[in-house]
Length: 365
Image (cartoon, rainbow, N blue to C red; front, side):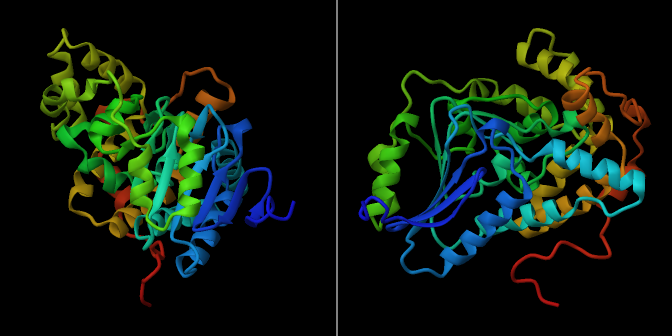
């Protein structure tokens, strides 16, 4: 019985399980009732564990997985953030920025982690789930991976390091994903760089056991990774069209180029999708994709923290979550309502420095 209980359990509650097992530090997301939407307690638990394991010689590598078959993580806990922000605005209290401060620090820690960080991703992965997986050194995609960054559809913006990662994707695919919220599967994730390897989800447990025993994560990953059979990337097939369209310098020009390609099915779906999004969020996201090309990761995270401060003080996020998740009428009333009414000076204000910038590990002062 004692042998069965040999794993050292650092934390276990209803939402997350964190264990040290042999050579592996293991994070298991266990909030399946909410598709593993991340809350502040989960983020802080991960921060604490990763900080402890960084200097623990017994831990050779870290892995993160989901205990839910439907989702790796559908993002942050939008209901809770919406409610906290809504009442903060009504009562004149502080906006719920602590979650984002901690989440962005976690993203930065994962990106700069000195030990192999291995994400085993299957099912839905969006927003915050992207942030705790894609910045790791190894990203293993199960056959049911379903990735999207749909934030502009709720009046938010692609955050958790998307400013850094999406512009690095080939053929303006990152811009396409940021502006349309389109979902992609495993072949597209592998081609675009979101995933580094394909591993059947049924083999995740065996791979984890290998990491528990072995010092070299590469040997374990290569043992279980396989070339996906008969999977072709549709994004790769459309790469030149995506580049020609989404490399444009403005949303208006992107829309014009889409309208000029009526025979392109993906393009027409993108045209319809963009028409449903928050005009302000679209403008912010396009700025991110352009600015992010020249930014290192820390700079990108600070830019995102500036934006989220202004988003939470604004209107569209609350209206978007209301329309999509609260009332579910799917009829958001954006302000301003049209792209032509979005002023460059207003978008620049979202990007402007703060009196108190996001503090990241290694900052001086």
